[in-house]
Length: 102
View 1: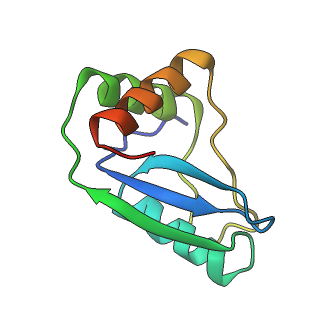
View 2 (view 1 turned 90 degrees about the vertical axis):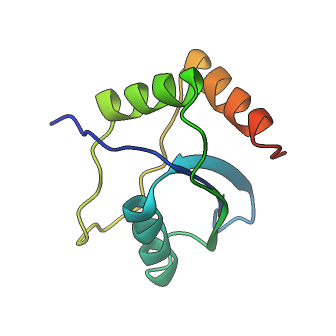
View 3 (view 1 turned 120 degrees about the vertical axis):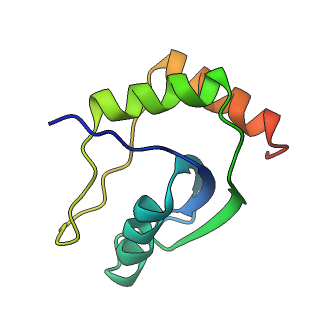
């Protein structure tokens, strides 16, 4: 089942091994990440930027995520990190640069 999520924020996610990564997300997904922290699947999550501009990079990345991943239900039992193609990573890198993150 494909998702139709609008991604509107940037968050920093800290894995249990203390490594960090950035993700484009929305308030529902951020809530799932916070729940993953409570359940011990992640060490931390914080919102870095809200209401990011809807650039072509955001639209491309959102399309990739919606076509390749399902949004987790509240009763999830593991945290799924979204792995990116090189093209999706390039879009995310441009989004981070546009929003002065990194």
